[in-house]
Image (cartoon, rainbow, N blue to C red):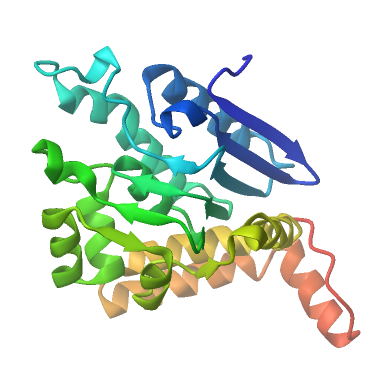
Length: 260
């Protein structure tokens, strides 16, 4: 597929997906959903791709839904838009068995904010900010917002962000534990690349298991979680990466993980 609304590159085991509608603050239309879905399919199917970075072009990360798109015009079934496009996107990011790094380079509004929060590690430029802009047009936070936000920020803060639609700065998001780090604008992509290539050369199966265990733990009992840890550790203990990690530790060298 020749992409018109995103940029997508793969190199050295790392994939970079850039939302590329800068004149619309990288807001989503149907075409962009189709192209992002195609790129994610490549990431999922290609075993050589072991980590993903998502960012935006221009001065914004993603302003959510492009309200000029006829697919979300008043009177159209907005539930269908979520069911067919946004919900699958959020599920794919959360369940992708490879690390997902998000570099928020500017405004992240509405679904754009919640797409960022669905990543595994979020870095944000200090000038960036997040907005749950749904209430300003009479809607409820979607794209996982009502599920992710309370878990990241706590009920009181999440509800206030959703009801007021106030801006949340990158520094405040870091202070509240909602993102990993707020970074000087000029250093954002350099720091994001460091993480991306670190993960691309890491123990991919182990990363996938960590993601799974952390997400499952949100709804599991202690007994269920202990059983899951046991089962995952049993599987990972037979992996080539565990064998390499132990050997490297004993030989006092940097491990050379293969992702197997």
